[in-house]
Length: 436
Image 1 (spheres, helix red, strand yellow):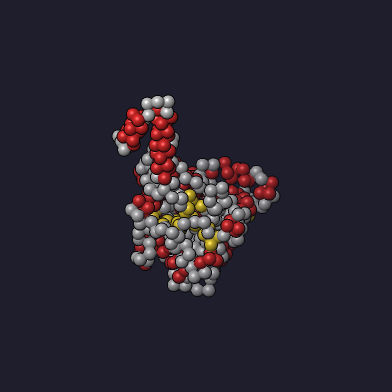
Image 2 (cartoon, rainbow, N blue to C red; image 1 turned 90 degrees about the vertical axis):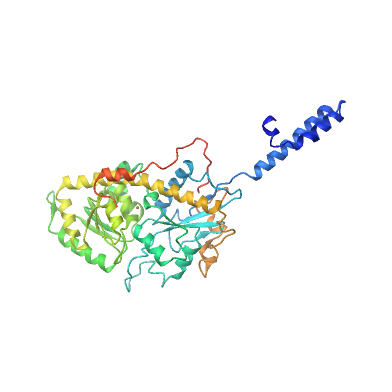
């Protein structure tokens, strides 16, 4: 009781008075009652002020395109919380925050707020007559409304971050955070992943492929595939023709099998002035794959990745592929750099996740957190069609008992210098949040 004496002197006179007045057999009972009453009051006060870290939900964890990103991002957020990156969260009420990738994604009905991981090529030029999902803010103003309603916006491209700050000055500057897409990629077991995939009977039954392209079909990509096919038709590997495939709409085990069997994988942009398709490239680098890609409009991003993949003009991609196929040493060196780079970048990305969560705490701590469910009902005209109800969430792996719910040079020494140790040390008893 000594620890409470200075903080709670007000209770002592009443107790002492009771003790003096009651010197008979009721003395002990009175003392016990007095201490019990104060203990209950202190317990109630402490419980009412207990900080409740937010619950993060990921409604796209079963998505064919972003499902693996979601699962890896869960681990990144959980690790950041374990490192204490949300320790300054000030709220004592329950808060649910949804984290979404798609520009038109559904949001759980139970969520109070949401974070938009901005995945669209917002700074790229439009291509008339081609269906490429998000095209522009002028054609799809609902995405601007969605960004406006988000508690935070996470962006992985330096160029696109600048673009959003300049073109949406009233929407994103106070809430946008640079979070490399490496935060949504698993790297721990990547070295053995392809061995396990290729050993599967379904993969062994698939035809071998030497050169692979996968992604949405556009006219530019179709033309590139034809030029690569023509170049590969003049080559042989071990006395056999080079096997080349361009595929679209293939996901899951079938795509993973083709990726693991391929010697070289190449990428081109879906539209002019696009930035690197790191959502596709990052997982390939973690597998130690030799990747050829067209240069992008994001010079800072290209500079980062120049060490780990072969960047060239779209016109020179066939020649770059041929040089890697015909020179095993060159290809093996690129594969090694790809894997090492992925490990370095994953570590750096974790620092940015931590900073984003720190910023999230600051929003709440400075009383700038919009109360209620600001943005969730208002970002789309048909908002309630974009919300997940309790019933639709019940069959999702987001459901739980508590909630429903990518300027480095080619030098590795430069890369190493950029990987800072700004994460606070892990603590055994750091407060945890619920990630579902």
